[in-house]
Length: 481
Ligand code: DSN
Image 1 (cartoon, protein in one colour):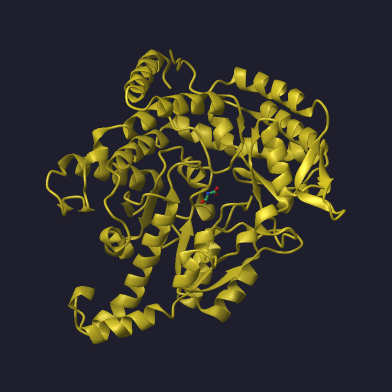
Image 2 (cartoon, helix red, strand yellow):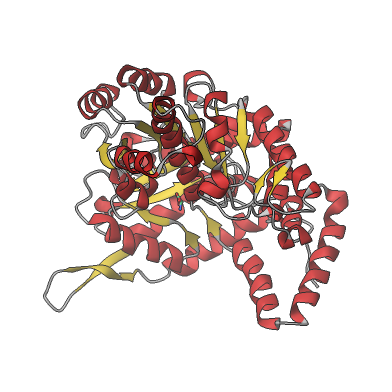
């Protein structure tokens, strides 16, 4: 936050909390407490960040009151001229920032963005030849019998994505998610020895399975991906390459991932959230080549209802921020800090999936500490370190208890943490996990959930964290009355 604005921001939030308290004081209090809690903990959740006051303030406006289904200049409601302005700005900033041919700023979340992408790809790939055959221009002109056939064709489509335990996302074809129900699904994993993506295996799976959509992208894979290779594989089998860059969009925006590591020039469709490493408001975004643009543009009403205009406005602000040099410096530091964290763990004898990182996240295998991911997550939380448990490849404890903890550097980098601080974080984490012992269940076996903490570890960690956090305040200058 620019220093000269901090007093203004403090006044804005004080006033806002006062107004909220006049209606429901408990909400005002919870809002105030959330700031206290976020300021006082080491936030290491890889998918979280701290958006700027400009982004946060943009969301609290009367744009929230406006319906704007449709697209810019083509709405189903009157009076959308200002929504048009902010949506067009968000799309323009996104196109410029990522060098994309087309950007769609309406998705409410990452899942929505992926659903828009799936349906657009289906519409584009299935509809076009069918419509041609039936000599009609739009699905609206299809006879009911043709619709039936189209539905059958849709029902036979295939998706190949990264498996959840290898670091993929549940929307990439995981069975309990709608993506796993919409498509015949198969997943590719990582090399069992190295934990790294094996492109030959992906190619083999693609040749055998012949997917309509090849999905690349991850939420817990600590390495960069060669998207040129993924495109080559997609082209070989006639698939559409869709990349979900929700986790690493900030590293793409900040030009840390360039060339073959930048998905935008290689994928047909790219989706992202805007609130993770990109540091914007909570929401989604779709980028596409011109070829897919008109299909993606039908996201509303195909998938979405009324766009969240206040969030689209905040996306425009966040994307404008991400186009500044300061954001590039930030993104570079996010990746450098992940290296520092990984090295800090390795130096202290911990085991990392893939042996390290070259993006913004680190996946610690906690098996060597004798605990499950669930025990580790809760023990760390007791000590004021906020993380989330995560499966490791072929996890013996499954997706609920897990054997891993995922760490990310975007949030604490926003607070100004650097190499020394992340090395200290690694030390604190190892100290807590070394002091965590599973309890024994009534059946005489180690519990997967309960544990005991060594005396003094919580107090020691909290004191050390407080020292780090005080040196790097969250929203410096923001003082609430
Ligand atoms: N929940 C997000 C994450 O933590 O990676 C993805 O949806």
